[in-house]
Image 1 (tube, helix red, strand yellow):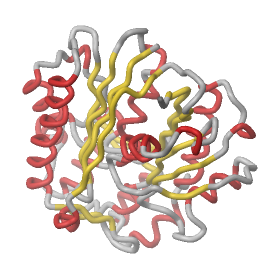
Image 2 (cartoon, rainbow, N blue to C red):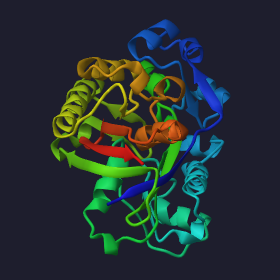
Image 3 (cartoon, helix red, strand yellow):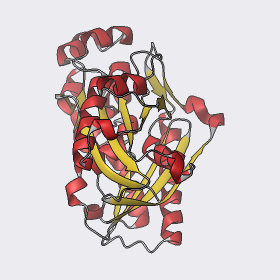
Image 4 (tube, one colour):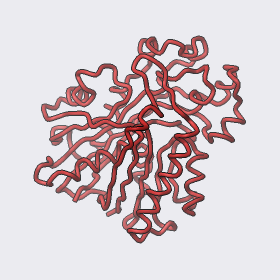
Length: 327
């Protein structure tokens, strides 16, 4: 039985407001963004002057001006997760990472993080995009418990705004940068016990969402949104049918793609807003860090006996869910 002992998160300090995006004069306005996407602001590692002057037309230059790297964001989240779990870095026996915007492909982001933490332990990337929180949990559940170290540090970090074309009105309104981390143990009890998990993918649709290493992010936005809503609803319904969920007590966390999409999902499953935890309105879509960052930011709100449903869909196309029970 896996347990989540602690979690952490990190976001850059710079905010992109809806008004700034309107002022770029690319065919959008603050009211449209709020009504159609439901995002009020988003965090970025890029200086605002750089966005205004260049629209990030050449994303290869973004790394040179960025105020923080994905590794630095991840390190902050990892240290918070260790503190939350009440353990030291030296107790970690395995590091697993997800990063869709690494500075370099080798060494891997997991190895860079282990080095930053002063660790000499196995470290490797288990990579997808937005559903990585449930992927890491489902991945570890496939191992026999005696094959897993006492403490595993998982994290996801990304700086998607460095790959956004700010001449494109929709993409610029969606993305934010961020990181999240979580400490897993197969033996030591923690605040959350893992009850269920699943992860699936459809590689035939892998080109629906693309983050080019030296280019801009692009996606088939409407098709991905429609698929995401339908698939997230299916994931929630499957858990509702299998377990005794009570939406007056239990909590739903979805992928933080945009707020209007999440509202569509919660209306379908009759989940009250009080039981729907999210951060997309203030931070934007943080890729794989999105759902775990929400959970980390609400860590102190979790009540014993509460069940938390995390259902996420993203690039791949891939999707999955995890059900936790608070101890």
